[in-house]
Image (cartoon, rainbow, N blue to C red):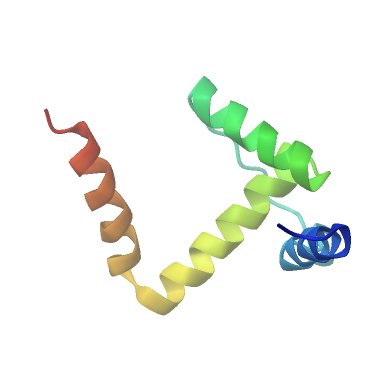
Length: 90
């Protein structure tokens, strides 16, 4: 069982991990696309938990994804696409 202090420290650590400041980057290129309502709901839940907008969450996740792709190359995408393929097969 965690103490109140331990739980608070864990919450603070989670916030620090996601303390990305979206205002640092120059924003000069719009991007728009459609997503499923389930994905939007998930993004909204994350945004609510992190006290950020959906746009900020999307920017953070896209940044993380592009940085990881830059390090791992196409293996990064293939790993994700392979997992999705497994779920779709009967």
